Amino acid sequence: MKIVDGGVCAIEGVLAAGACDDEYGVAVIVCKDSDATAVFTSNKIIAAPVILTKNAIQNGKLSAVIANSGNANCFTGDQGIEDGKAMASIVAEELDFNIDDIAVASTGVIGRFMPMNIIGKLINKAIVRLENSSEASKNAAEAIMTTDTYSKEFAVETKLKNGKTIRIGGITKGSGMIAPNMGTMLCFITTDIKATASQLNAALKKAVDASFNMVVVDGDESTNDTVVLMANGKSEESIDENFEKALEYLCCQLARMMAKDGEGATKFMEVEVNGATNTEEARLAAKAVVSSSLVKTALFGADPNWGRIVAAVGYSGSNIDPKLVSVDLESQDKKVNIVDHGIINAFEGTSQLEEAENIMEEKNIRIVIDLGLGNGNATAYGCDLSYDYVSINAEYTT
Image (cartoon, rainbow, N blue to C red):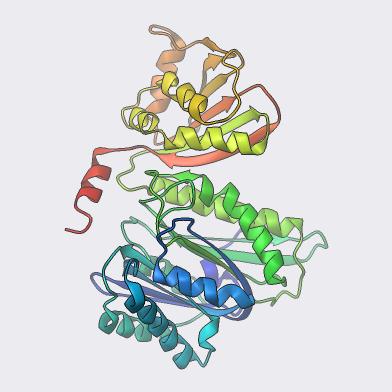
C-alpha cells in the first residue's frame, strides 16, 4: 500500500469541483454509473438530505454527490425535502443523470431553510469547474468545510491478492459535534474496484466501525452524518481482503485528521486499548477515555492524571480487573509507564511523573492501556477540550 495524491480524483474517471462564497460552499463529485453504498447518522432527528440519500442509495447505484456547507437543511420539514430535491435536480439536469442516482449531503446550522437562490448558483458554478485533478479534489474538500480549519483528503494505492493495483480516495469534513457514532461529518470515498453494493456495504461498515465511529471531539452526535462509497469498476478487479484493509486504513487516516482538527483543539489524543476480552470491549474502553471531559481537560492542561484515565475505563462497560491494568503515555520519541499491573509508578517526585508531564506538553499524545484479560484491541481518536471550544460553540449561530 502507498499514499498517493489526488483525494477523490486519484481515481480514473472521477470528477470533482467546489464553489464558495463568504457563507456557503458547494461540492460536486461525479463517479458515473457507480455501484455505491452509504452509512448515516443514528440520530433520530434526521436531516432532509439524509432522507433523500437513503432513498437514492436503495438501488445500489450513484453517479454523483452534491454537498453543501453553511446550512444543515435539518428540522426543515417538507420544504427541506423539496430543497434537497432541487439541489439534486440541478445536477441531474446539467449532467444528464437520473435524479435518483444523485446523493445529497448538507452540513451547517440546524433549523434554517436552505437559501436556494445562493446554493443554486454555487451548484452551477461548481459544475462548470468539474475535472479530474488534485486541485479539483482539494476545492471540493474546502467547499464542505464549516468550523474546520483545514481541508481533509487522502488517497491510497494498494495491490490486491492477485497482484493487480487498485486505488481508493476520499475527502471528509468534521471538526465539532463529533461523537462515537460519527459526528457532524461528511465523507465521500471513490474507488476503481469492481464490487456489488452489498460487498461495498460490508466493507464500509467494517471500516467506519474502526475509524469514524472511534472519533470523539465533544460527544454530540449530528443529524447529518453521511459516508458515501462509490466504485466505478474501472480497474475491472474484484474486491478482496486487501481492498478492505486499504479502505479501513484510508478511513482511519481521515478520522485522525478530524480529531486533530477538533474545534478549539490544541492537542491530538490517540487511545490504544489492548488486552481486552474482545474487540467490542476494547472499543468501549478506548471510546470512554477519548470521550471523558476530565481526560480532555487534563490533556489541555498537560496534567498526566492517570486516575481520570482508569476511571473512564472503569465506567466504560468493559470488563476490568484493577490489578491487571497498565497505562503508558507516549509521544513521538518518548514513552513512560505510569501504571504497571495496578501499581502506580508516577508518584510526586518520581522520574516517571516528570517524564509524563513532559509528554503531556506535546501536541500528539498516545495513551496505551493494557487490560491484561485477553486479545481484544482497539484505537480511538480525540482531542483536548479548550477555552476556544466553548467560545466557538457559544457563538455558533450569532
